[in-house]
Length: 257
Image (cartoon, rainbow, N blue to C red; front, side, top):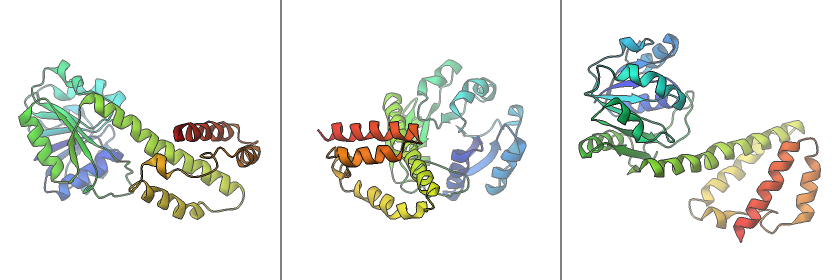
């Protein structure tokens, strides 16, 4: 596929690499800043642009990997003169219906559910892709592109994808916020977060074999107030962490029942 990549952030960077490795041609990279566009284009042996008017008009597939709030601003400009092509966005929380107002015939959603950072390359082979399309032909094309990178490809409606994205926030972003709290508490007392890594790794491994509710351990499961109260006392200087600890302990205990 001849693909124009609209975006040069964390997702676009990783997706662009995977597309090229799968044999696709990323003919152009657009970013709001020329520096970012050029940096990614160089890695993909492509061309970077920062002016929407310079985006190519002959790509077969336009992948829009921008933050949700930017879509309404740039799509009317981008689509004009390119209505014949297949357009997809990569957002978990944006419905497929966003394309309908532009009179497009060929459109969809191309959602790789993973956490991405520019500085860390990830293998796409097991990353789940969730696809939605305006028709069978469009779905066949998106499935072909997705399966060229991953063996974990599914169809999902906009409503299902909303809950995938919400659940991912709990599983990834909120979990990482817990790691950050752990790291800060340790660092305040001269300890390294590295001590937590074997624990984190085993916790992640367990939920490959057990339902998360069955894998839960710790004082909150049995609601051991003696331990919980001692921990809350240690968090006297961290009122948000204290509130988080108490609420999370309640959730763990109530979910057990």
